[in-house]
Length: 275
Image 1 (spheres, one colour):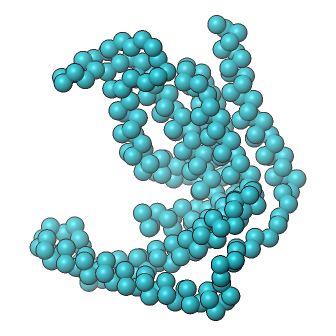
Image 2 (cartoon, rainbow, N blue to C red):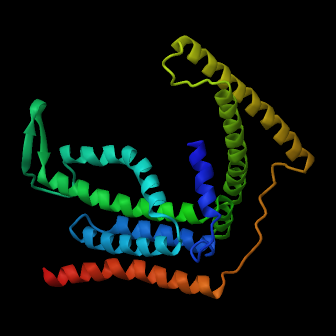
Image 3 (cartoon, one colour):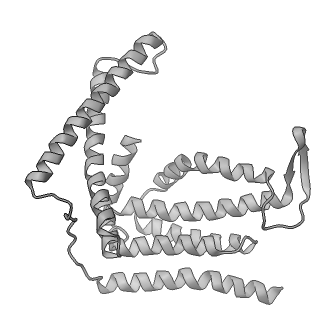
């Protein structure tokens, strides 16, 4: 997980027209796309809207000049957690359907319903589209830029200060964690090596965790002392310089938001005319 953190930030430092967009534009676009796809009713129109949104995402990802492998790798890492939740929907009844038709009956009174399968697929489409825009945002925007963009969009100063500290020292902790792992590797220690006694492995991991805890505590003390020396107090806030959006960012934002708003409405009106 720590290595993945450094890798994500490495992708955000690349250069493309999407990377150069203001963080506020990408944050608003991601939120608009997520809200729009979630607001679409649980019906077949989700497939149409989701397909168009995903095609829009593919265009943006291609403009970012990032490899599709990066997207697939990050999506696969996220899917197992939410995939289990989506999978279990096929066994449940929900409020969006009145009549249910069992497709398969299993022991212990468990049944798989056709309507529940449809609901699970609709949920899957909404999940993939939402996560895709989040991956685009995090892969093309530096963490510090996202924080500054959030503050310029109205993020409370208290939250900004806490998030700013977390972002800054999360990478410090990651660096220390990497150094500890490298030290263990140079000593030929592998926690998953079955040739070693499990008691020895647990003991060494305990020593390592204790070392990390002590170093984190000492680092926290040094950081807090340094902050007090620099005038940190109860009324201290993170200063973010005001920055107006340039014309190119405004044009892209307006076109993108118009696209995200118009597509669901157009699909909904088309469905009404057909039925």
